[in-house]
Image 1 (tube, rainbow, N blue to C red):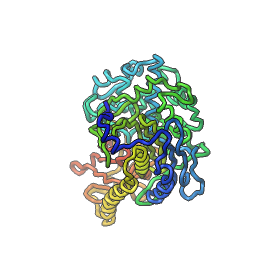
Image 2: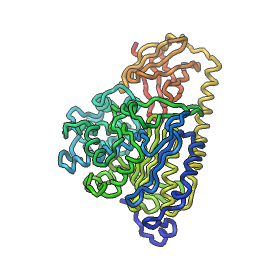
Image 3: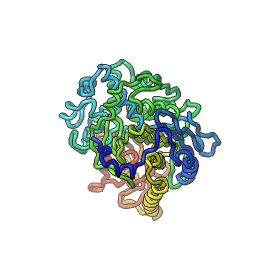
Length: 507
């Protein structure tokens, strides 16, 4: 499936490979300055980096601090929430169960979870375990995540709710990143083993890989003694924010780990399932997770050649400069991270950061990969940062326009009381608009610790600002029919979900 090195001469010109034990000068001499500069440029409190090459750690280091304003430095054992990098653990766990003949990856989901249903009845009946792990159920990327992410729904309720969502695409026709599908895959594990997803990955993956400090559940971060705090940036200001509890979709993204522990995971991946000479994961099982299942597109790269973008079972797969790249990223409240493998070079790169508002975690990994492939230095961090600043400026200008409308104190055609009441969305459930302290507030059934503050913009529109900054800011238009409020459109930040929600007023 991947374009290999058939133009040998050209490849030696554009992609010189360093010797088995050679360390490129960028990694040996420049990384420290590069990262230190990025901490300031991107306003990131802390970063942890690891490079594995030929089964050995070439670089492992923490930079900056665990918490803004506190002189507690990040080290190689500091825990970061790794978000969707958890998906590769879930995919590996399912492949391991298949290798142990406790299930088949081609089993229908309903064999293990008889109550599993999709709005597309035939798709629900035909879906197999692989479909859950490669994002090909037909949903739009992030579809439903506002309902699922950091809410009070149980794992069973997540499965039931997903079954009520009308998928944007037809079954198995279009790749769409579906966090809830991994939650459902995780719920098959208790049926096959009698153990929860978290118990199984601790026993079968964390323990044999000596990932001694790694946590399976987000709730465990509160008690961790060496853990990075979560941060975000809101309107240019760095803020410390609480950890989110996402254990209802744990198999999709709840793991927290350090570069020390993740180096063991990467070594195993690059040595066909072996760690310290012991076969932890059968090579055949590992191969299943790297097998292309879904097509994302033609691929491409910012500067160098890349062809094909695919997805396996918890891994993104692409070709870059004649090499297979196996990778994933992870973004949860307060953290973004990346794990990247270049199997043919026996190279692995781990970058962990404790803000959710940077793409440095991707810039650094490409810088390191390019260094090992002999590609030209590009300063990806500066390129990415320029793009980020442009996007940030555009978003802030839009927010300022909304704030200007609020400042005009334009009257609404109806009294505030007319907008209050109970609203319902068939997927999400209920939401209430209440009048408190002279303003309207929107309170959601499944988001108990946050609400949206509504400020009038006139014409039945309100500027909505969530108390959880990750959910973002937007304009919520209310629908009025025959002088009565009948509904409202709710939109959260794209980081959570792209799709808007239509709520109908029921009383």
